[in-house]
Every structure is written in C-alpha cells, then in structure tokens.
Length: 292
Image 1 (spheres, one colour):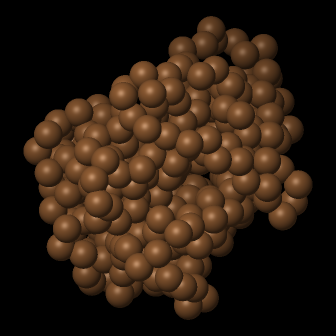
Image 2 (cartoon, rainbow, N blue to C red):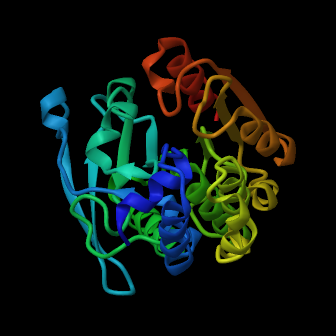
C-alpha cells in the first residue's frame, strides 16, 4: 500500500481546502481501508549496529504465508540476564529505531528485533493481520534459540509495536504457549486500532465524516484495551508521555486502567518514541526487568 496514506493517521497534514482535496482523500481511504494507515515503511538503511560498536547478526525468517522477514540479533555484552524482543513503531524500519534498544546489550540483555513485512529488507506489503503474524513468527524463532534457553524473555513494544505486542502477548498467554513471557513493556501505545483511527480522522475536518465507515474496515478483535487484562499474570509496564503529540496520554491511562495486576505505569515527559534518551527512564525499565 502506498506509504503516503499512513501520514494521514498519525500526522494530519495541512492540505488545501476544496472539494478536490476532499475527493482525493476520500478515494484513497475508502479504497485502502484504515488498516493501511497504520503503516509507513521504507527500505532505507539508516544505520547498522556496528556503527554503534554493537555486535550483531542478520536473521532471516520465512513466514507461513510465504514472506521473508529480516531482523537483527544483538547479543548481550556480558553474561545475559535475559532477552528483550523489540517491536518498533509504524515508520521507516528497524535501522531508524535502533537507538531505542542500542543501550540494552551493555546492560546485560540480548535484543532481537524484526521488520514487519514491507519494511526494510522484509518482503511483502504491510497490514494489521500480516504484521501480527510477523510478530508471532519472530517470537517463535526467539524462544527456541539456544541463547534464550532458561533465561527471561521480555516483550518491548513501542507505539504500533506495542499494539502488536499486546495482541501477541494476550494470545500467547491464552494459548498457554511456552516458555511464558517474563514481562511486557508498552511504550507510547494506543489503546485500540479502531479507537485511534476514529480519533485521528475526527481531528481533521476533511476526514471527519469518514471516521465511522473507515474504522469499521479495521478488525475489532485486536483492540488492546479489550485484551490487556488477559496478559495477567505476566507483569505489564505501561510507559506514556504527557507530551506525546502522536498518541495522546489518555491512551496509556486507559490501557493501565484496563490491565490486571501485576502492572505499573511510568509517566514520562518526552516526545513520542523518545523515552530512552533519558537515563532515568532507562533505569526504570531496567528496574522492571530486574525485578521480574
């Protein structure tokens, strides 16, 4: 799907007024449905882990429906305390999100991250169900790796990655999959696909009238606010910034209220997806990992 459309959801552009602009927007949205608006991939490699003096391996995984996914395995720089499975946000690819996790190997954690279909070196074109399938494919590879055996496995999802990770963790727990996840961290995550779609469409006058019919094109079984309680008894940490201009703070609050114990909330004060530039926020996450 053309990646221009995803900007309409997360960053409403200023467009010229007039019936032609409205017609163009309506045509694109109604043809593609809201599902495509969650994805803004590109295939540019912005940086590789070695540029940050990180050891890494390229990982290529085949999905059951014929796609090939690319990921990076970043081993811990010391005896590993556990492994963090990172699911990135909706824009660009793993190379542009690397700084969110580059600090973890020095703290004793392996990191594994993948690009969803259509992102980076991964084949295909993204949609919600495909990305969920990709997230599960990555986790299934991770938990049978010798380097993760008998060690904690945490899921860290940021923005869109948090919504995908939340649905994956819920299903993983409900199925009784092994090994169990040790903890789930959601950073700047929206409370539901349909909810955020309606909210963004409602905020822009050219798409206001389309919010209901377009949101109905999104499958309703992946709404995080309905799924998060089922992650329990796996501990959940929800991180959200009061200055998040992309996913408003109330989404994090709603997820926390809907979650079952054990749960904790970290209120931050950075732009969207910039949590880990602040050492104190890194320390809070390390404390969560260590306690669990």
